[in-house]
Image (cartoon, rainbow, N blue to C red):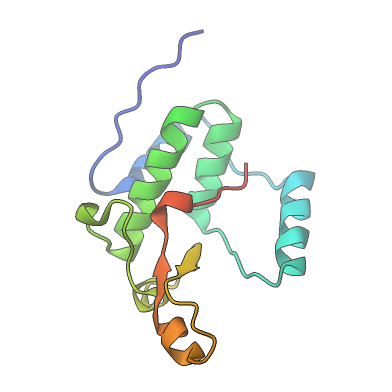
Length: 136
């Protein structure tokens, strides 16, 4: 069966994901793989909490509604919209304070690694939108 092309909107991506899930009768259900991913995340001393929309995106991917080709673009547009990051920052980044203000923790990279001044390195953390990792 040929997959229908999905046109990802520029705005209101969360509503788009909800509508897509409704149209295809898709609901998120936790799996053993989710439990394992959570355990590994805790052991790595990381704190990753998916919201309702991110869980629906995972469910849509598992159901085959979102494909490997369109899953990441939907996720990136959703995160950009949620964080208020303009499209012009494609693979650049925003300060970690913007992410914290939106209540979202995403992968980051340390722009400075000077051990003599850790406070400066901490201020140099940047969100890295090119290396978002997704649990499927």
